[in-house]
Every structure is written in C-alpha cells, then in structure tokens.
Length: 387
Ligand SMILES: [Zn+2]
Ligand SMILES: [Zn+2]
Image (cartoon, rainbow, N blue to C red; front, side):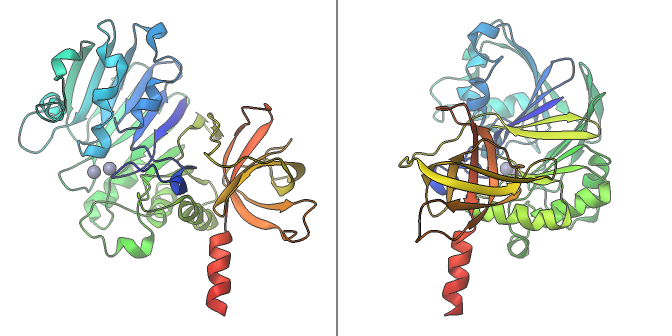
C-alpha cells in the first residue's frame, strides 16, 4: 500500500521560502490500498496538489474514493471547495468523519464553510455523488480491501485518529492530539499498536508544548514515546507549526532519530510504500526552489539507505544560508546527515553539515537531486554565542 503526503503543515498554510522544503500546505494525505482503491484523509490546502496528481484528473473520470475527516478546523477542510473532482457528476465520494459537537452532522458541517458570504457557490454545485457517514468513536468498518478503525483524540471540539489495516500493512493517522490526558494517551497507543507507519502530530518543540496546554497539539518527543510504547515501526512527524522553518523541523528529526532511528518528517511529495515489515520512503516531486541557479562543482559525503558510505562529486544547483539543492550521481538516505564541500574554492573549503530533506530527480538532467538543509544557522549562532 502507498501513503502520499500532499499537505503537512498545521493550523495555517505558509508560503515562506524558509518552509519550502517540507512545504506549507495544510493536512491532506492519500492512501492507496493494495487493490488500488484510494482513501483521502482530510481536505486541507494540500488537496490541490492531490487533485493534480495521477488518477485524479478529467481523464480518470469516473473516480470512486473514500474520504476520512478527522475534524473540521479550517486547516483540515479548506481545500475541499477547490477540489475539481467534486464538480464532476460521474465521480463518487463516500465521506466518513467525526460527528461534530452540537449542530448538524458531517454533511451540514462541510456545507457550512461554503455558505454565504464565505464562498461564491454552495455545495449544490459540487455535483459529484456524495454520501456522508458520521463515525462513532471506537468503531471499525470496511472500505474495500481496508479495515478502518477510529478513536477519539484529545483536541478542542474533538478529533478522530484513524487506523487503516490492509493485508500489506497498517497505517495510523493521529494528528491534532494533545498528550497528558490518560484516557487519550491510552487511546492513541491502542490505535498505533504494531503499526508499520505512524503519522503523528509533532507541531511544537517539547519545551514549548508545556506552554501550549489546551491548544490540542503534541511534539516529536511524544511521537517517539507513542512509537516506542505502541511498538510502531516508522514514525512520520506531521502537522508542522507555521513558525517552524525547514532548519527547525530538520533539528526535530535529528533529535527524534537519536531515540527512534525510523523517523522522518512529512514533506509535500513524500511517498511511503508500506509492505510489512518494510516501509520505503521516496520523494515523488522535484522541489527546486525559486533561487539563483549555479553550476558549482561540489562533493557530498553521507550514507546510503543500505548504510554504506556515500562520497560523490556533482554540482550545486542553488545555495542559500538555509540549504542547497545538489545533483550527484548517488543517493543518500532521506533524513540522514551529510556534508557538502564546495570544490575549487579556498575560502569555502570547510564542509557544510546538513541533513537530507528530499531525494528526487533533477528535472533538467534526470540525475538524482538531493535537497539538503544546513545546520549553518545553528553553527553561526553557536559561534556568535561563544564570543
Ligand atoms: Zn490541525
Ligand atoms: Zn484542529
């Protein structure tokens, strides 16, 4: 089964260049079951990129898919009115979601964001066949070749976490969850039991989480604790804070990996292929930033996915204080640490440490492209503080 990340940012979308590598769109995850049936989880602004992906365009009509809604805060629903497949009468979507506190059910709640004067057309123009089911917490049901389980998470106005089981593996989506409530903590661990892939709310740094009580979110440290006690396999940090730039998220991953090596951070275009006991990650879309391009010779030292050392010469496509995109004829492991050295340069001969945030293919050369976020800012801060 496949899991594709289209929106990974929490609360509010960002278009700041410093959040470019992981991406600024709000939650939307696509799951493809072994039989090829598709399940969308949440409808944040990442839904726009899902809609442009293979199998969702006009050529693929009629589309049949199911949709799991964790809850109805803006960051989880805002992409829905802009999703073209909903405007095609031959498509069919089955929605399942949290029954909201008070008011109507899932259907009325989704219609609510399209009422006047919030949106120019109402839901009656979304002519795709739609069916809605309010999900009772702790229920289990079948969607084609997948079994889905929902448990309530600890979040203001409620939220559901989902567990999707297939004969190829188990994927758990548990975001918008605040730890510290014994019942909620048990529910999350129960949901994540022996999961192959655990997608977990890691919005705040652990130190900040203490000052955000009641906001309904979590940290990478909690993600590690849940993965450990639930015996989950791969941990994906999710729902990044709008104020966390690429370098910060990179640090969270590094710290989490010291305690749980199978950790990476969700990024737009990241795909996980899940087949128990293996989970393989790859980036599916190149993400060359809007930067001045160069062709400086460069050397990259790091580690491949199989653990063997990598030492390759290539060229640098662009460079900022935050990070770089290089093209080299070899591929380091996603989220691993690397060192980049500019060749033929006396002043910049020192190796620049960083970590791999993307591994894709350079659209110009077809060679492996590697997105790296430096730890330079951290280094500079350290050196400045020393003075
Ligand atoms: Zn959220
Ligand atoms: Zn929320």
